Length: 430
Ligand code: FAD
Image (tube, helix red, strand yellow):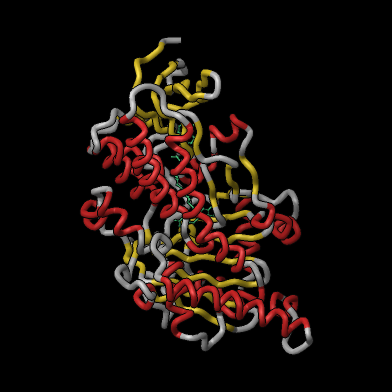
């Protein structure tokens, strides 16, 4: 096997996480190689971004290119709790931190290609259609990768740091046996693209629409070319129950859509323009996000359930932080120690932790009922909106207090229900 001389860093995967690390390292003059197994543009799920992605675009120097791409502007989200009739409009402009009142809805084929080209224009070497089959270790230290281009040959490529940004494949944490599923978030998703969806009257154009009905939450994400992404998320046994064990993805998808009167109404007269894609058991995390000479970024490190559209933001935020720590570690001569990269692992954990609590809460019927109630205090609403915009890096003190009060009021509500002073949680969920 030919051995290729070393880079400062090798990045496995050219999604948003990988492109961000590569861009930031290249911009400070590091030699970076990105190995991506697909040929871009390629389809990918995860099309609704958060407002706090925008300052991140500025920081990595891609904001102007994103603006020029003409993606659909998104100003918020709209949730329907079909069981209680409650609704919740999330308006990003009304957050406590209202500096970033909008985000984008993006076709990931275009968005990811834009980010990967930006990494290349920033100085990273990008090789598409090149799969990494494993990370090479010497003792506990990652020293490179085995890469396989399309012609089937293999080469060993060395680097001082290996970054795994391979998304759900989580190549390195699987290799190390440190990947675990989150049993509280065992869910599956089915999704496809549509055309000719008539935008529902009264709904603000560009928002993500999220009806939640008997154990399934659905999304409609509108794109600037008039097409939409449509998806559904559910506990896997439900699709078997409704469509039968042997049903195709298409049949499962259609049957779950038919189950929702609101989705049926929204999709009347529309046409599906892609095949149906499916994914399950995607909420995972790795026991460790960094070690001797290696770092995990984005879904390869941790992925939370997608209900609050946090995936791309987290992958890029991790990518930015990883690049900073790697650059600092590379300043020292010799090998990169686990201790040099440990601060990144801590930061990545903190970032994800700030959203995790809300994701768990979403699946708690009592919390969700409160979330969709008519009159929460404005301050509570604004504080939660800031988190849902991605404003987790510097949460203002008062917003933290209001958020704690939200969770306290849910705990109090649950207690009341236990005493028989309100509907039981199961009734709220029914
Ligand atoms: P990815 O975007 O997956 O990129 C990884 C890249 O690595 C891919 O291009 C892949 O081809 C490449 N790769 C993999 N293995 C190898 C290998 N061995 N060698 C070389 N290359 C390799 N997020 C949002 O922000 N908004 C949403 O609305 C949203 N909706 C979602 C809905 C569902 C149902 C799911 C499951 C996820 C959703 N997400 C959403 C999450 C989002 O898709 C991910 O969090 C995001 O793509 C993570 O970026 P990444 O760079 O870590 O990984």
